[in-house]
Image (cartoon, rainbow, N blue to C red; front, side, top):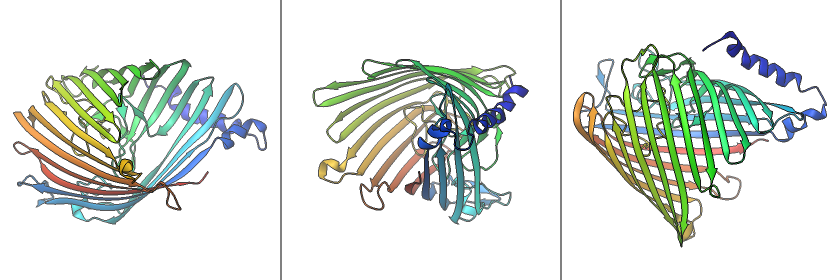
Length: 421
């Protein structure tokens, strides 16, 4: 339940941080000495062509393609903790993006906010601040940040990352066991400067409450995770995950198994909901090659439930352009990753994958099929003045039955992280 006390937590914790930092105090040493500040420079070009007459109509005009180009600045400042029984700290994200190119065709790039006239904004940004406190191996964080949890993953696939506003408690008091619990009440999507209520499919709920735990054992080769979340008055969802990694001779074999179930909750503002996901991804790595096979099966009348704008990365077949998360959809994936360090070019990698889905209900059409092919060629500079600068080229195709969009897409992403502290 939302309460005045909950809403006052960010201010109270921030004031505690400030009061714990008297000028020149030795207790503030860890706050500064353990601080890390980076400025990420992100240049993002996006081009999506719509094929077979499936392009969207915007203000009476067929779009044909979605194209945009932005330059973004991501300041990530994270303090350490003050000394003492209770340590206090502060994290700040400064997010700002400028449109370099992109007219009415930028509407579906999701690089920038879109005005009522269909034009992309020239610039946008926001600041996310989170106060934190730590006792032993338990940390409380209150404010706004880029939250990544199996049950709720912020999306960082465009100019600026998505952020959530809320409170989270994380505890590592027992070796191998991490416990999580908290509540988020506001959502800033990746192409939006505002903070909106948490929602699913455009239906606003109340707070998003969650709890979970992950236990790692067997030399950290095995992990079991259990999660539960509720978007109040909209949906409730549970997730169980098992991952394992096993060396076998010159190979390392891996498995990622998961089961998700979701139903309507409380006042059921989005109506009756029913979704289950059974999935598994299996990897085999040898030398500089990694091979992956994955299978994902949805059942029920509802697509995979996730907060609007959030990443679908919990699903094993989630990719750059599609998540294969329609009602009743079955999908499988084959993937190959290669590290060119084996050919004497460290920092250069190549990924190719193919995903095929069937039995899906897409735009109301049952038994629909779809497929996608995605490639990523990436290079990270290993030394010199431009060390850690990365360049990624992503090339994708998606084809679907019926009126769903067929697309051919290219993205060029340049990231340069500057360490300021």
